Length: 146
Image 1 (cartoon, rainbow, N blue to C red):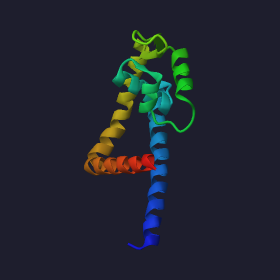
Image 2: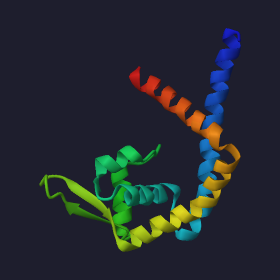
Image 3: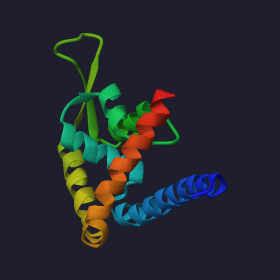
Image 4: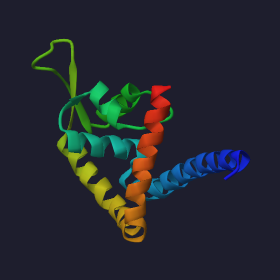
């Protein structure tokens, strides 16, 4: 492959990845809308459900959001009665985030709403997606090291 075609392949990959993210978020937004959740809110609830009580820093490490700050997202979830903030039992300065019962219920509902899309992708592209995810991790690690 010539240098120009390799560069074109990198740019095409980048473009398709951005478009996939946009299309996937749009599809998820349709699934989460009946629950009254945005994609970022649903992602945060599902992460908190999986992680259990965590600090804001730990939650932020699991979320991928291009805009906004995780603390604003959490403040909104607290205001909506989906998350509670409590003091850490081991560090007096730290705050721990935990789902309320309603938050846990919405996290389960979000996971169920997402399930058909995830199952369709798994059935259609499962093995290739695992390989692609590994490639993406490698590319991200290379960029992080720069």
